Length: 135
Image (cartoon, rainbow, N blue to C red; front, side):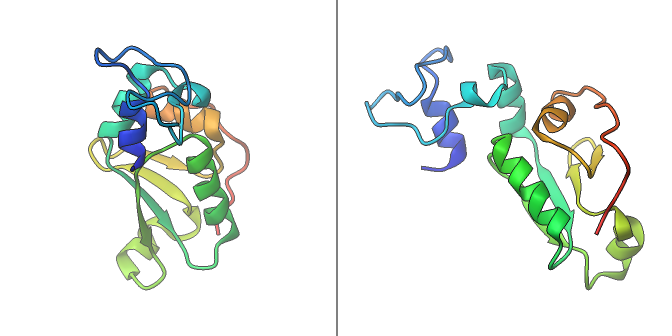
């Protein structure tokens, strides 16, 4: 079962939250959106977003960004490695990792944690997360 199905299974037939770990079939649900600190509206918005993570090969900060995406329970995103693309290299260079919402064009630069990521997903302007350090 993919992450989107897990989140849908965690809600009842009318979208109301079920108990964590409980699905309509009685099987345990692998992820519980209520554990993530996300509202149901936020999870629905997240499911409809087309997210792209711009990163480099062998980038420790990029690996950390992927861990944050998992911690925030981002169900689906694409990765683009900028190493061999001159246009992406000139645009993102030392900024990576950068998460981009392909629909709105908004970008979230590193550093970010799960709370800052959730605020960005919900449309809030996240507070500055410290010095900018890319790979």
